[in-house]
Image 1 (cartoon, helix red, strand yellow):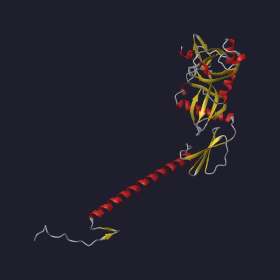
Image 2 (tube, helix red, strand yellow; image 1 turned 180 degrees about the horizontal axis):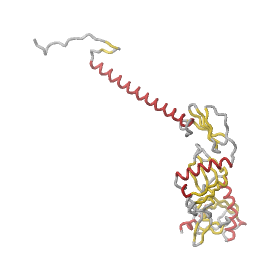
Image 3 (cartoon, one colour; image 1 turned 120 degrees about the horizontal axis):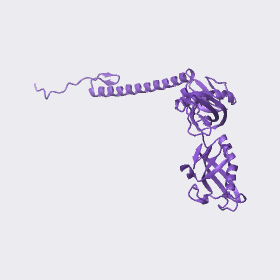
Image 4 (cartoon, helix red, strand yellow; image 1 turned 120 degrees about the vertical axis):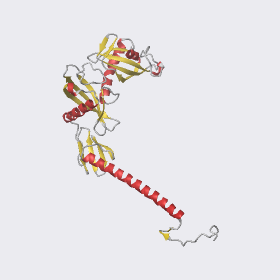
Length: 320
């Protein structure tokens, strides 16, 4: 018998769920399709479970553990921020209070300096210790003498201006460090900045905005004008506009053998009645764009213990 020339035996199709199981190619193709489908369903199920676990975890962390919400929308309300998550609402107040519930009828109370001072004390000590600017082992005493609301910030929280006194066990002032050297290192003023979760995200001795910034800026305008006039650098009769901005605070500063209680780099912006630049002398000072005609320039400003302007000069004084 010639096996080579023998015709291939015809098989009757045997369909199972629409697939001929006698057709190896069709069976293999369906197997691959089902495998891919099963893999995609498994991946989708894992993603759904992961999302649910994050949402449930967020709910438990906020409602049971006092944590910060992640999967929630936020809305500014009077004196605070309201977060709405899946199955809960949490209200963070500017005074440090926190309220949680599925339906909230609580509102934030008006700012109470005494209550907030206690909240601020705990948060500031913890924040400073965590950032290694405070040594608890060397700290003798730490008091919030005064605190005022300053302004809302870009982080969704609020800034406060605090007056702080402290003492160290070793008799020095090195148990609490700041980026500015104060004239009285044991009695200092700092901005404490809170984010939308009512957690401190920055402590700084100076920032270029806010209620307190506006107050001290207005306080220095007549003092700067008086200094310039006394030193024949300003002609009051020809002066039309005179403004200043505080650009940098250099704190207690020693210059040419003299120690000053505080110091700033300021920007002077002015205009003259004769539409010239003759009412203020800026010779030797760096102008903002290298052109004296722009009527704006920088100056260094040094203060005494009574906050009086006792010396002004080019900004380069801070580099000498």
